[in-house]
Length: 116
Image (tube, rainbow, N blue to C red; front, side, top):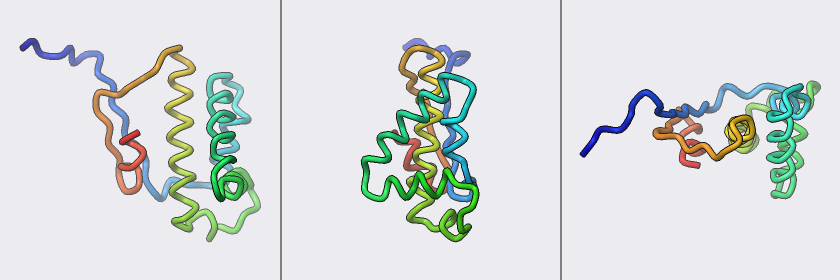
């Protein structure tokens, strides 16, 4: 068996709880990069259709928000999963083709979206 070309491997490391901040999702839809903006709009549109999705968008798009809401686990996890999905989609938009990592991992909650 021939070894895989290790010079062109793709790895994703997905962040976990603790990286969340006010306006972290809003930054994507306001991006000057059209690939990032398109990815942000697409993922937030999907999130809006989910139960409590509009609330997650409100929490992570507003600068004047109660920090307890930002750090509440029930809000953090969908917020971080959306953040990671936007980054992945933005990369695919920029490259113009689907991207599947050769290896993916995460820490804390980031393990879950790394399976995506």
